[in-house]
Image 1: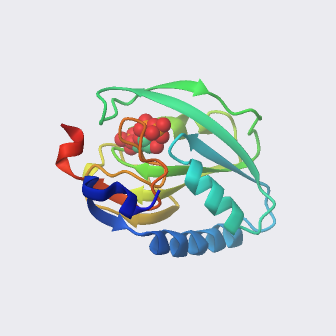
Image 2: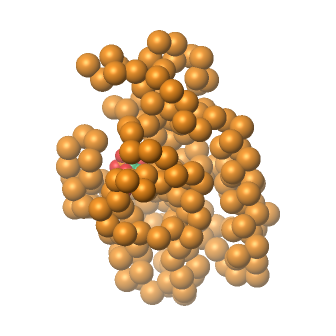
Length: 183
Ligand code: PRP
């Protein structure tokens, strides 16, 4: 889905396709260099990270492994509560492995801080985070990702994996929606 396909539902493009692609190539090269000679598992957090995992992993030269987790945050529709439940766990043991968690967005930090505690309790060699988007003004729990694509303002955004009511994940850009979409 292109931004034009949104028509009047589009408010503003925050990150366009070219900027996303360029940044992914940069991040992939950094991760390749940092993990050279080490076994690496990319852990994608469903569902938002699907697009990023697909693009990042294919931009990398490293013969990495991929695994997935699905977690659910209890809370209102647009904010996390910090109470997290595992819907789908990793398929493989990560003891002694280098893990890079791949996320579409770091918002309040509640999901990732819980996830990092959970993964670190399994005895991995290391756990780091790569997030495509970060909202510095929304942070409630400090999480320090090793890799950040873009810092964005504290606005509700969709696209590149991010949804509103499960829609717009397939939008090729990161954008805000016009107010009438929510009413
Ligand atoms: C989103 C996103 C992160 C989390 C970030 O997931 O993918 O996991 O929220 O928010 P936080 O920093 O405030 O915890 P969501 O729960 O919307 O699930 P989804 O990926 O399936 O859309």
